[in-house]
Each structure stands twice: as C-alpha cells, then as structure tokens.
Length: 287
Image (cartoon, rainbow, N blue to C red; front, side, top):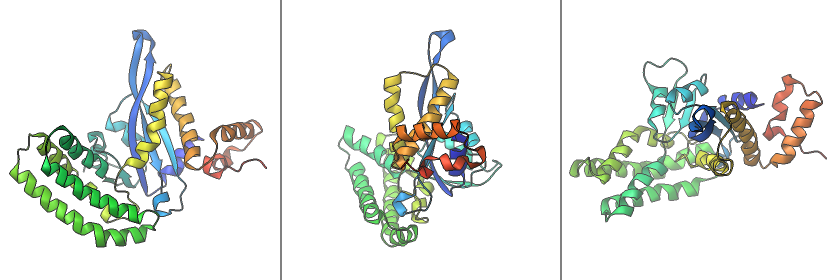
C-alpha cells in the first residue's frame, strides 16, 4: 500500500518535498543516530485540482540530496522545496532522468528578513517584509480559484509587485555589505529568485512550502513522544504507517477506523491487483 501511495503521487505534475529528523537507536554505540524522513506530498485543494491530497514519508539514513533523487526517480514536473542545497542536484545539467523544475518558498525568504528585523533596527528588512506581505494578501484573495484564474490574477496583480521587489533587491544589495545579516538575507533571496518567481507562471504552484511543513509537523510531535525508532527497519515502518495516517487526515478519513477495516480486507483476501482501492482517498466506511 505504501508503494501504491508513492506511485500515485509520482504521477502528479507538481509535488512538494521536505525532510525532518528521525532519531534511531544505535545499539552498538548505546545512543541514537540521526536518520531522516523525506516527505513527498501532493495537495491540489487550494486550486480545486482533481487529484486527492496525500503524503508519503520515506526513511533514509542521511540528508544527502542523493536520497531525494532516489525517491524522485521517474518524476517529472515541478517540485516545491525550501532552500536546502541538497535539492540542487535535481537540476544539475549533467543529471540524467526526467526534468524537474524547483519552485522555492517565499515563507523562507520572509523568515530571513524577519530574523534581521527581530534582532535589530532594520528599516530595509521591514520594507522587504511589507512588500512580501502584499504578495500574501493577493494570495489570500486567490485561494480556492482554479489554477487558470490564479495564474491570470497573479499576472495582473503579483507580477508588478515582484518587479518592484526585484528592483528594490538589486538596489539594496548594491548599497549594503554582503556579509552583514541583512546582506546575507538578501543574498539568499537573490540566489533562489528564479524558483521564487515560478508561482507567477503556473497557477498550480503555491507561494510557499507551508503545506508540507504542516504535514510533517505531526512527525515532529510524535518524535518527542516516542523518543526514537528501535532500528532502521523500525523507522521505515514508522514512516509507512505515518504516511497512511497523515493521508487519511488530509482526506478527512478517521485513521483508526480506516486501518482496522483495511487490515480486515487484507486478511480476507483483498487482491493485490486492486490495492489502489485501499488507499485512504478511496476508502468507503462500512454502512
């Protein structure tokens, strides 16, 4: 079922990806080691897309971008991510495989400026925050519109705002020190500029990566409760079960009832060839 969930997500033209720590017991050293859950998600509800929302957590022993590349083998389309450098290998010129475009996150760009403004008197950072807030106000008006309608509205309303922000960004980078906290924040935004602007040309793309950050929050909370997985296989199982539970929640399906009925169906001989019928978004509660 986990493989079927992954396969369904991979057929999507646009996905989101993020990673979070997964502490795993390392018995030989009498301590825990740090693995990672790589979350791959689809959520087309903001523009009324036809595909149901879902998320799959794949455990890996590290945070190398190679793991992301392995998980995404065969995927082609837009991947929305944060600024973690490991994702850069997905767009390197010598990479073989299907083309991937990276859309970046304005919430992370905003966070860089917010940190500067929070720690000192920084009118330039505050000016940047106000400009980003205007983009978010536009997005709030567009939520629930079709992708075509969102694209048209962004072209009309957001493109001029982005043009102003770009001119402001170039001007401020030329005036200040690149090694100051403000300079580093502006450098970050400039580095990911093309991917930050991808939402202007595709109505399916979100302005930020917050959707998947909300999706992996329960993993972080459970990490505090469970402390660690007993071994790598346990972490893999943790990720699989979490994938089904969180996909249930995204589709307004009660996870405990779903898992109970699904296990009963498997025990009673549900055919492997019809495994897609058991995915959370296809679940039909007993009458």
